[in-house]
Length: 311
Image (cartoon, rainbow, N blue to C red; front, side, top):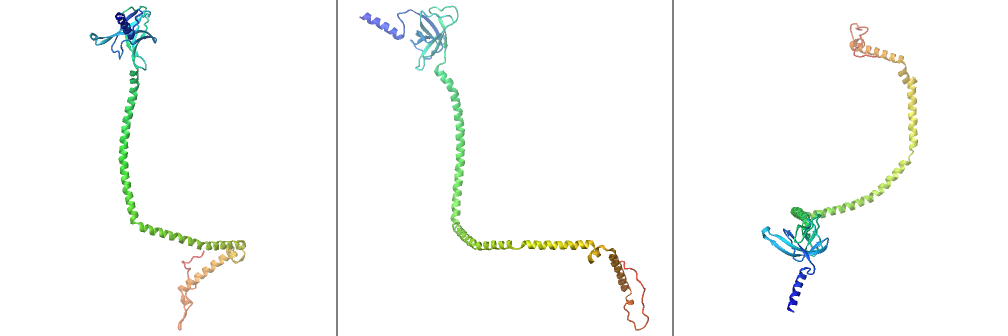
């Protein structure tokens, strides 16, 4: 029973480690700089199928603390030269797995050969890579928000000053209203009286407007047509008179059209001018009072007064 218990403990321990104790496996090695949480018994996958387990992990301090991972791969899995063991995330539940990527060379790997190790970017790395631009934009957004907040602060100060000035203005207006309350009341009373006066004036103007309308109707009733006809007749008579004058009818017409009458008048004016000139030069010839002596009749004719020209 003791031997049976030891055997059960041995097989159970290996089963819990993920080792298949009933089938033969090949051991392969791979070296990583960082296993990022890989532990013993993590699966080894080929195209998503579990073909082995991680048997052990050993630290190589003589090689810059690299890590040597030993894998148990089923003997039926043929690995070609160039096969890579990629360390990747095990999914959303966490953990690490090793994905085998088959090589294309013709040589077949044998037991205890070393595979080429590589590391796949995990979810955390992808999240970090995707989150970095977001963080950068968030940082820029925070800076812009700081600028906006600073502007709001300045705007708040300006608004405070405006509100202070508004309060002061309101206080001044209240004081002004208090000082002129009586004057404003008097002004309102005067406006009310003016409105009442305008109403009374309107009542008095209505009869005058009615009389004005009556006067307008009376003027419209006048015989304006007869007055215009009389004016037209007067204009016609004047036109006939002017036509007769132009034709030489009457004294005015003969005076305008007959040259003989003009010449006679011209000669009469010349003779009258000579007479006046002689009278001015020899007044004794025409007016003479003498008691003794002979009257001097003077020259018979005086020269024409050059100051008067008759054309």
